[in-house]
Image (cartoon, rainbow, N blue to C red; front, side, top):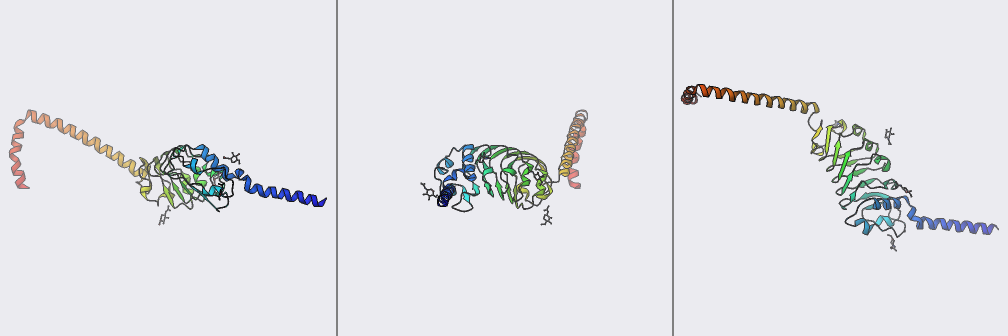
Length: 267
Ligand SMILES: *[C@@H]1O[C@H](CO)[C@@H](O)[C@H](O)[C@H]1NC(C)=O
Ligand SMILES: *[C@@H]1O[C@H](CO)[C@@H](O)[C@H](O)[C@H]1NC(C)=O
Ligand SMILES: *[C@@H]1O[C@H](CO)[C@@H](O)[C@H](O)[C@H]1NC(C)=O
Ligand SMILES: *[C@@H]1O[C@H](CO)[C@@H](O)[C@H](O)[C@H]1NC(C)=O
């Protein structure tokens, strides 16, 4: 009797063991990549040809193009590097199931639409996030600052608008930050003041260090306006006066012309 129970246990145990290698389809990370593949447009067929899900060997996803695993025979994604794959569509879906992912590079594709407002919930442990050279639009979610391990944030060359969130003052490990060539405006959070000004260039309305002082740019613009107004009024009135004088006192001009040589000599 107890012999049979032991056998049953053994069979159950075998089944469990088998499942851990055969039921890989239910691994969250496999689900993550499946969902991602389905959610993006892949005109170059890179994912279509490389991300094949019919081999369930442990670690099979680690051979996929752009996928780096923690360990080569474990289906656990460390980083996703999909740079310049020609991908289109919205920000990919399913990433929440890549539960131990620490890096995401979607740069140099044609992604569009917003950066998800729950991105810090989807991929909380990223150390780098590169969304540069796409067509992402809308505001930068302030919640990105909840990704407390973030060391590099690259958002340059998109169509992001609005302000840089004040919450970006809360980053503690950020070493790389770039928002150049977007449509951002408003003051730059103080904690970002030490990054190079080129990392903020190409935005019409950004101000504050490392760019020009916010109040300063406004005052300067006002002053320029005033000078322009004054000088155009001055030029217009000068023209009218000159015209009237020339019209009524032509001799004065002739006289002035005769005086010219003297002026030059005196100088
Ligand atoms: C499945 O993937 C493993 C590891 O990548 C590889 O060694 C094996 O040959 C593959 N099997 C098939 C049937 O493709
Ligand atoms: C994560 O995977 C499970 C199944 O394993 C699925 O039901 C769920 O929708 C997935 N979540 C996301 C965000 O794709
Ligand atoms: C983000 O972090 C703040 C402060 O740490 C916390 O209050 C807030 O609930 C977090 N939000 C999310 C969506 O995790
Ligand atoms: C910028 O760098 C200087 C010196 O490297 C440092 O003293 C200062 O605290 C930094 N400022 C910020 C906002 O990080």
